[in-house]
Length: 305
Image (cartoon, rainbow, N blue to C red; front, side):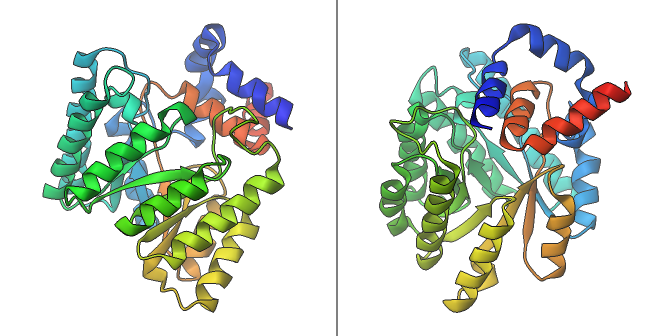
């Protein structure tokens, strides 16, 4: 399974495969995981999810921008997203990548761009989640998040990845900020010198991060489709008297939708990450690498033609 995951993550950088998948992907079933290529495509999906009792976030897919002018276009697009969410009364917030806002060009550029969006979100009564990317970007991402929180911005959160050895220490350093954190397992191909290669170790680290975060003063988003970890979270919160308002479950659009609705029926908040945009290929490949059932879904549609 690890070999298959490595192959799929490597395929994310294949120009030939990217051309093929982007040409045929929506016909083969990519629309199950991506809400469309435009904001107009995504809004009806977000509204439908809200109407079924689910919270949502949305992301304009893209990363690794190396042109400053392009980062300004990304900022403008996210401002439009926030305005549209506000105008349409959607229960939706925004998640974004700092490399989409210029982190690979200059950290200060990315910081300025995300500050603008966090401030615009605050004016719209909304929230921005700064996603975590490859390990080489973790330090800069946490520096920017810490600077935002220390400047008094409360409508911003970030992400920790349980497969990285360092995340336990990173969490300890963030706890005094009463942070809003999403805990994930991790979707990038990292070397065994810095990341747990075994699923059991990743899961154990996840449980530890979840417990420590819930025991703190902030808000914790439990981002997993793993029912064992979900039930562990529920039991831990109940045992320690942690209110349901202090955490929520987060899942991906198109993955385990019945589980999402079941948790809502049980009285828990569930947020569905619902991305859109023309640059959806790498996102899809990571979703296939995370869960073999996703790959089988696309292969079945390929056979059906």
